[in-house]
Length: 249
Ligand SMILES: [Zn+2]
Image 1 (tube, rainbow, N blue to C red):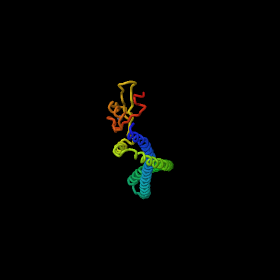
Image 2: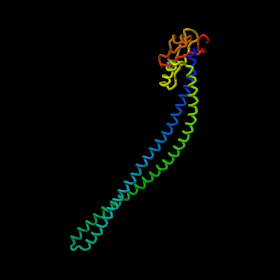
Image 3: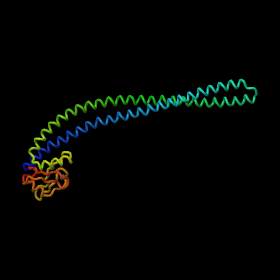
Image 4: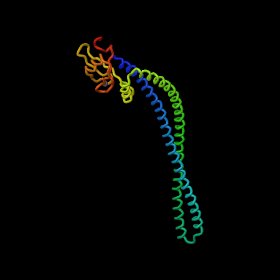
């Protein structure tokens, strides 16, 4: 392998490690975000249930008030009943009184049902409150772990960046530019080894990155020349290792 390709290979080793550390960084912060979302959802659920309790309570209060005023109507009708002068008048007031009492009884049932609903939703609210407490505790733990992880990863990143800088100095600027461009697109996966298939000529060549066939021209050129050649399929920079060259197989 030529000097430039050799230097790029060394850079590739560090570049892969860098990409791996960056992935760990994002998965660590993603874990925090996922748990934060869980807490937010539970809080929203709690708010909805809380609002439901208030609405039921308000409705129950209105029914209670109406019942009170109807009780007064019942009392008034009882007094009227006692002061009626004719049987016909008595019967009419009595019918009115009974109708009112029957309506009131329905209203009492409604008030009772509403209060039961309030109790039920309140129980659900308490359950969600417990879930929130647990989820928040877990979020705190995940945050803590993530913070420790971040410190560890940052140290690794600093070290790798220093090493990358000195490895990059061994690569001429034009090939380095190409390397950086592919690294940015392919998440640090820039170079691919040419795999040689077969025991005797004609050999077949495969890109170790994408496993597609490579022309013999690429392989032959890279045996002797230190130049940048790309896989026609995946665009990685190709290189050949001495031990894979058929002459030594
Ligand atoms: Zn390829």
